[in-house]
Length: 273
Ligand SMILES: C[S@@+](CC[C@H](N)C(=O)[O-])C[C@H]1O[C@@H](n2cnc3c(N)ncnc32)[C@H](O)[C@@H]1O
Image 1 (cartoon, rainbow, N blue to C red):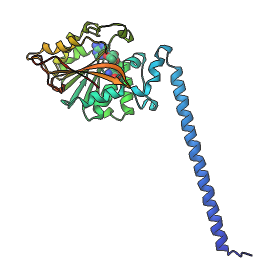
Image 2: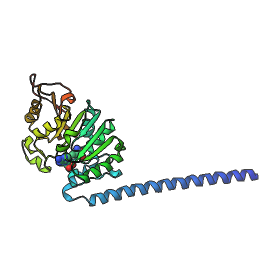
Image 3: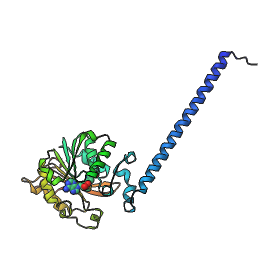
Image 4: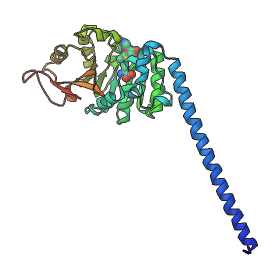
């Protein structure tokens, strides 16, 4: 027969209680995790339900646009097809070597502004649409970079002479998804004005200009933009891919061009990124 002292039985009770409380803690943790997963699924289904069918393909790529999409990213219809994919926006920010202050001249949903700010640049973000600026501000808060960005609601073409910066980043509207149907996208198709005018306006801020353009843009025309300066600006042109798909073309001018290629030496260097 085993005789237990009262101390022994107290200890047994303690052990049993600890086990029970551990089990109940674990159950609560599992319950909480399941609730979180269900809430995430519900909000994902709800946001899918509010997306119009023509935007469904963009919605399916939501995490390549904003990896933190599920934390409350906001986008309007134009934003869905015009935001810079996150991977490319990170790359643009890494290439803003002349940075300090970056003017994001067409800020949209904040895709580029977020990544410039995340790398420590101060950003002046301009967009003509106050609702987009509201959404962009919300998105910058999700990434915790809102303190590094000054938003301005206004027309970039009018504001440019008053703006100062070390880099001007241009991601102008490409005229909607129909840009894909054009074989050779000439610079006059850019909005709100043709690419030459846009470039000249940006030059009032700085010669260090980065332009994000459609994948079918006329590259010779882009290269010729550097001739608008005397002596011609250095220029570098690269193709931007996401998971093997060509998403756009980026032109770097002035100090943002790595290769220092001038018009006398050769045509612009075109790289795949
Ligand atoms: C291609 S989107 C920019 C996308 C942005 N890079 C992003 O990642 O979200 C172009 C933006 O230019 C804005 N826009 C159009 N005309 C403008 C103007 N004159 N001045 C400033 N913004 C303008 C549009 O409202 C739109 O949000």
